[in-house]
Length: 208
Ligand SMILES: [Mg+2]
Image 1: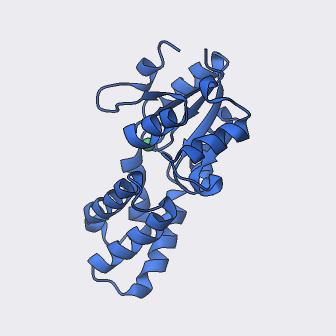
Image 2: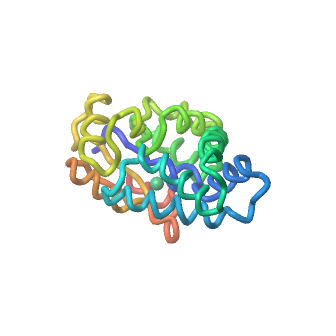
């Protein structure tokens, strides 16, 4: 029924929390105890972005700034921390259980596969490559390259245009009801919600 599948990256293919922890520890090795605070600040800002309060590009600047100010470091520490975190983030690649097997199955069934994520293109591709799953994807649609963030329908429309596909030919899979499911549906696509707490990747694709 579908010709292609778009798949979210964080918390669908790559495990966000351990990746975040690892990048944080590489960026600020002297203060591992500040991770919870960092996670809380960045989590709130990313969540606000899902609801249109900021763009992802803005959040990428805001969270290092707010975190550094909150721990009482000077402003001059913002850029070094931000760059160190980004460089470290590009190296993180903990897979969600079943991610590789899901991609193998979908590929074996003949679906064209594309990644669809809100972030920096070069970092997300580096992470997929290091996780050993980049070759499954025909292309990667990442918000900073596309020019719009999920759930903006223009993100999905541009991704469809680049893939040469119609909305009804594509299924979107992701763990966010807002950015992945509702965003894709607003663009006329079908979407499959990956509820990490209650489902496994292999189970949700059983009927495909
Ligand atoms: Mg996600």
